[in-house]
Length: 230
Image 1 (spheres, helix red, strand yellow):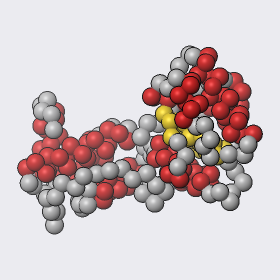
Image 2 (image 1 turned 120 degrees about the vertical axis):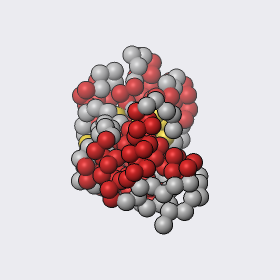
Image 3 (image 1 turned 30 degrees about the vertical axis):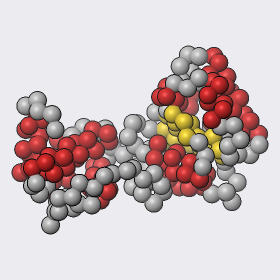
């Protein structure tokens, strides 16, 4: 039975909270190796579509006090260098957002070289394989291929189903299988859209004090299609 308590949700970025599936198992295994101080491997690059779990794994690596930086934040070179000064690891996300900026490109390459030379942890991620990241320094592009490289892809229905069930577990509710199947059938394969579809259903369920059922899921979809914001 669904109880109506609106629990605040704080995303928990850890290996334990990551949802493993066929499309991300290698990435998870590699990330755990990078996070293990006893493992000699110190370099990891992850790539794959938005919402596939790259950021989750990077932040799981960074939980021990290593700074995390996304290039979506458009850092200036000085700020980026200061952030990682004295750090035990270099964790940088969204490499596809590297602008055509020689100073920033050079600063990232210098950081990478310093951390790699000193044997410290390096974990990076982007939407594309290294050679398709056109604004990176050429040296950095080639060095990323020296370490562990894994692609994440959670576009298959089994993986997407597991993601919905993980999000519902975070909300401390049970979602019937027919509702999960309905969300999969009516939502794009982009994981962010999938999660938002479930969250809309959850918000409406809470607002109306009604259990999550297939009729309610259909009702929410009809309301969204009519232009209503939920």
